[in-house]
Length: 223
Image 1 (cartoon, rainbow, N blue to C red):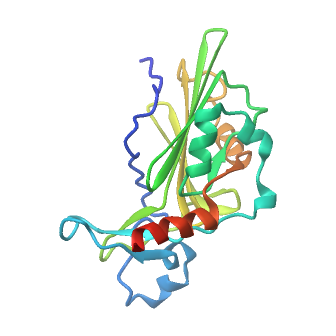
Image 2 (cartoon, rainbow, N blue to C red):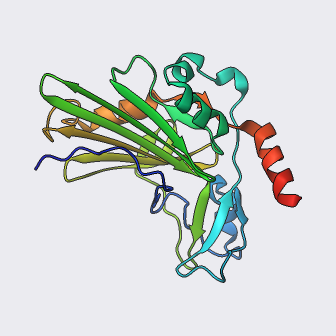
């Protein structure tokens, strides 16, 4: 079955990183308070009563140093993409310009950003997606479990479903979800798990609103 991810919807992507700290136990679990993936959560009051299935919480973003920003990765996007990166509420990680992609796009929302990249060569289509959100849900009684893989020096998950590779991890206090899909399904680079792991390792920090933008945003909310 030929499956290729189309352009991303403008609505915020649903990030369900089971077991990577998007869920957490109540605060009376002292052992979990030592996990950075749990410590960076702030309770955010729901707008319409208690959220069914889990309380919404906003993660505290840990912004990378400006010196680590890869300008070449930023400049690989058009004006619309660069504007979305500049306004992103979370650090934007993207594949470097050395990754051959015919199209690159970045969209952003109030709590998230999404990257979409695509290429077609010699009858093989490759689609790369990457989403990140600073929102999480806390489910009472659900303990986060460490992922069995190491991604970018962090605990993570690598899975494959209907030929689509997915890698998930927490970085900069944010939940990231990287996807890799090919058509045909088993064409390179989707024929080996090592490819999505290498793709994750090669991601570069392209920018974001940073601490200054976050402070301005909080100031507008307080007014």
